[in-house]
Length: 211
Image 1 (tube, helix red, strand yellow):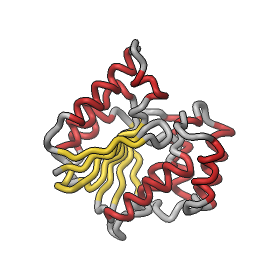
Image 2 (cartoon, one colour):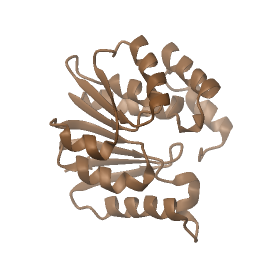
Image 3 (tube, rainbow, N blue to C red):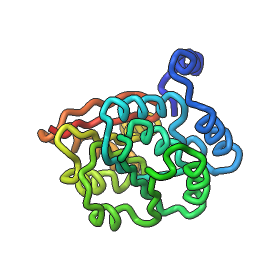
């Protein structure tokens, strides 16, 4: 869901950096060939992720939830020359698609796609991450936050997607998924180890700085 008039969104995209030919084609192919294309970060959010990554100049990035690889490629734009991005997803179909896109990119040697359960894989990653992007199954957002927190460097960023959940977080009666997203947002808001900013960009981005 977009929390902005489509005409304003088009204006914002027209006055932001272009997404590049590879990303534009990935965007198009995702909509043509993959189910639930609304899960794609897209132009404006992708440029925002790239912008944050380029500011941080991360050595190591962790992404939880690969989908078709769009956000991974955007985040990789800020990596140090010797940096590495690990992206985790359990979906064989979308992973196969994402791998083909990564191979076409300049970051083929810097992005490692790990297939499997994030809750099992994260504890095995012995790296200090400068940036973490959480965009997987919403029921486990709180778990992923806890699993990655001690692996994030001081001053590092954790970014969580879909935290407005199509606007359902302000409705009176929550379904199960909305309750879990709302609980995650409250957990972050009450965590005195971080500074946080919730942005109404696409379906909501929670940007968290570890103090």
